[in-house]
Length: 493
Image 1 (cartoon, rainbow, N blue to C red):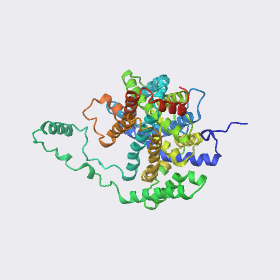
Image 2 (image 1 turned 30 degrees about the vertical axis):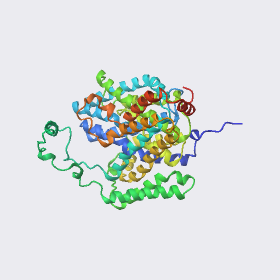
Image 3 (image 1 turned 180 degrees about the horizontal axis):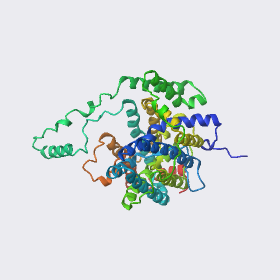
Image 4 (image 1 turned 45 degrees about the horizontal axis):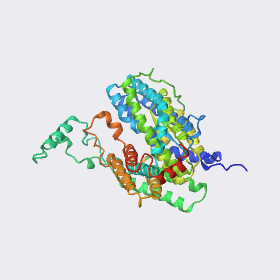
């Protein structure tokens, strides 16, 4: 009797693959184009070069998503429903390089650092893969919960925008920093000096376009459509609830004049993505080590994403698969550096989408990768997707990111808190650590810039905290019961 094929490995009919793959693309698109826009402008590149960076990013997003989901031999690909995108953890170091070295030379330095970091990441992937035994359910559940809660900020900002406008206080401004230091020194006496006049307006009131009621209305409608379809629809229609919600939101955006098509008319039909567009990369050892540090952060976060997908799909992940997935992070980063783009990681938004739709087939993400490749080669099609306002994704974001958090809660519900009180400390302290960057985003302002990549991510802080606390309180792998559960979930290590 033939062995049943797991839902993760099922190949759906082509029309379903395309529709579900497009749903994944729409969810991740806003995040995919954000990093090339930020870095391109920091490099002071010409508009056509910035457009090229976006096309290159979409093109490589597709290639790496296909490798990660489909797999290449035993070495590359976690073979789970994963969409790959540029990690925001790399933005800080790349912008610093760009500001110090604007223009094509700065781009060559960035891409040299990315290529070097990608090679090193592939070499250390087996070492990172061995960390799986340090992720028993109490650690895994806590990290996945923090991932979902952290992502909520993204979904909320999609709805309301950002409260801080162009004239709000910038903590990197020397005048503001000098005043803040003087105010801190004088706090004991109560004689706090007044801030400079240009920083007088309250930051939360600085952006007059913040939280317009129309944005809230569209997001609520999108959310209601998704929930209604999930409640009353059946079969394939229920699986594309998020896509249908986005379509309804897009139609509303057009009706209210929020969606414009000027960029579509101006974009070219076809534009090849060529390697080393800005010239031969420049390999600086210090910059390579800096970007390698970013890749270690990325791989720790990716471990959490892969464990979340394992829980959502019901397919255990073992050390070999985890190593192959992490090695693909390095390979994707290497390919990104060659094709003038950036470090790659699994996109959290799409992990949430898997939980919402219940569609577990990895070939859906292979189809999404193919769509991304086409968008990278056809700027006019990419411009059409880009014209969708992010507010349309807001209502969908609340569902998707909440689903990730709910998965963490579900894992924690099986953890023994009654007889093993130490588990309460692991969850409580790690959750608090994960909230620091969300509640106090400027907490790093007095700390050395070199360690910012390590502490800017709440997911990373929670991961390190949970692993170390669990090792200290429960032993290297947790309690005996949790070790048995981890072995059942992760296979032999």
